[in-house]
Amino acid sequence: MEVDAVIGADGANSRVAKAIDAGDYEYAIAFQERIKIPDDKMVYYENLAEMYVGDDVSPDFYGWVFPKCDHVAVGTGTVTHKGDIKKFQLATRNRANDKILGGKIIRVEAHPIPEHPRPRRLLGRVALVGDAAGYVTKCSGEGIYFAAKSGRMCAEAIVEGSEWGKRMVDESDLRNYLEKWDKTYWPTYKVLDVLQKVFYRSNPAREAFVEMCADEYVQKMTFDSYLYKKVVPGNPLDDLKLAVNTIGSLVRANALKKEMKKVGV
Ligand SMILES: Cc1cc2nc3c(=O)[nH]c(=O)nc-3n(C[C@H](O)[C@H](O)[C@H](O)COP(=O)(O)OP(=O)(O)OC[C@H]3O[C@@H](n4cnc5c(N)ncnc54)[C@H](O)[C@@H]3O)c2cc1C
Image: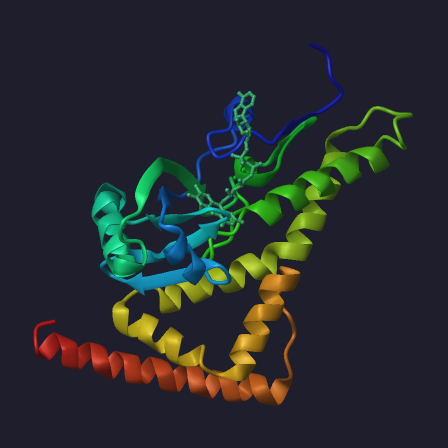
């Protein structure tokens, strides 16, 4: 089949990526069970999603219970301990405990989640978008928005580069999409990368994260950043206060870690 350009939107195991020798990325394995729980228990999840953190549910990610219309998805993920995923899944189910008691597993899913863009996302008139390119954000594992957005940006670059279909596109036209993407989202990926490295590394660090999340300014910044998918600029005085509080939380967390070590936890 003859085409002008090929856009690889074929997910984490992309064959298009293999065809252009795009290289591998670090990936998490996500495991999820769809569980049909009794109607009276489903009421609890009507307006609520749960996120669990701790070494039992995942050493480097989080466990979740997400409502999906008439059932819940219970799952967890990890990059560093993929072989233990079933153990983490059991722990996640145990955390949800009686809230999902009496539930029936209707589907089991496991899938790689890219943790980093691929070393190559473009070759000639072939470009990658979404999971194929490796656009899931760290910390949250959010990928749907970024898959749709990158597909749109790439399509817009082709329409513009081809002057609405009047000329053949070349690599530089597709590169415009990559440049726009990196300019718009690179800071978001970087901030979430640092957040994950600092706060997801141990139970005390996670405690520090939870402590920080009680702050209204943190809640607003996080909510705005998730909503607008960009690192939202804050106000300098509040940012300074946040930096001091963060250091305080981390110092307390480290002290807690030392104490826990002493008592052998
Ligand atoms: C368990 C789990 C939970 C998740 N939860 C969330 C969440 O709550 N929120 C969120 O934002 N993200 C979540 N994600 C991530 C999100 O699902 C992905 O980032 C997103 O689906 C990527 O979209 P995509 O279109 O790039 O790839 P995909 O959704 O994987 O779509 C790729 C498509 O290409 C097709 N395909 C593949 N190969 C070929 C081929 N050779 N020929 C033809 N077609 C082919 C596939 O069948 C598939 O339909 C989750 C991921 C997992 C694994």
